[in-house]
Length: 338
Ligand code: PEP
Ligand code: MN
Image 1 (tube, rainbow, N blue to C red):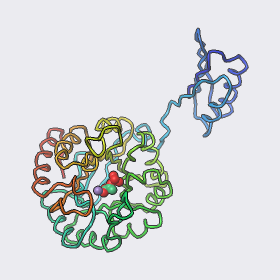
Image 2 (cartoon, rainbow, N blue to C red; image 1 turned 180 degrees about the horizontal axis):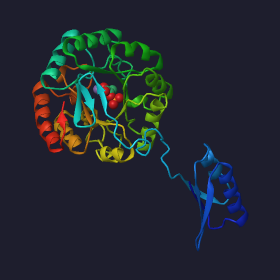
Image 3 (cartoon, protein in one colour; image 1 turned 135 degrees about the vertical axis):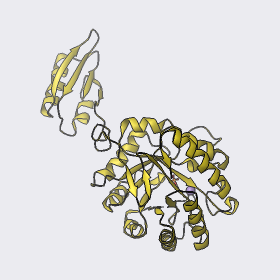
Image 4 (cartoon, rainbow, N blue to C red; image 1 turned 120 degrees about the horizontal axis):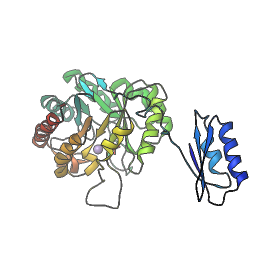
């Protein structure tokens, strides 16, 4: 913990800041400059010191030295976490692919897409049964019926199922059918939901909130990790910016940045990240080149007729081409795609 005193801080104020540090278990070291004094606290501090110091008179700012996300940080666990569910793997030598429609629409639609996902070599099937829609008048998902269809697709293809859970009270139900629980972007900071998902013991795919900073994203993951569930994947799915040529802005620098900060696998969702089918293949390849550990892609037999997010779905031919060209990039990165 570093405390920067203001240039006008008095000796009494500096001594008081030192005393508070000691109370919280840190040994203060003074750095006396020409303009101001800095107090560096060394040791293992008790929680809550930061807020106590920030409000003191004579203190200009307080800078934490260690990351606030303890379990998610690379310091806490220097080797990367690899998540395996059925044949799906995120991290290590494999780049796992989760593909499927935005929403489960019917048994025929989903089983047909599940077979395609299997055929092109992907290992996880996505599909929303409970849909978070901007408008309450839009299709809200087939709910439990959708979950039953997903389970049937798993039974037939062996694909791991990833589907969204929107509320803590639905975790029990969704966990009966899913292999991986998705927490959607709109729910990234729904703390009771993060805890309930963590307690299910299933791997959690946590999507970044469109206006969340990376620190907020990692602290959200920390809520899941704190339940004792270490299986968390972080999904970059685009953020909201002033730019409007795409639905969201997909900041791929967050992939290598996250990998410098955390041991958790990083997933990229170029479908929501761009909101435009024509941009998805390039950004899928770029995500792999940037070091993504897994991908999430929306696909549809006939995107024009999709009940949600058709404008960003790949049709079967585009999906196949995207997988083929992305596999080449994965190879160049020393990894296998699927
Ligand atoms: C989805 O995956 O269909 C979805 C709603 O994603 P997000 O939460 O990223 O908007
Ligand atoms: Mn969608």
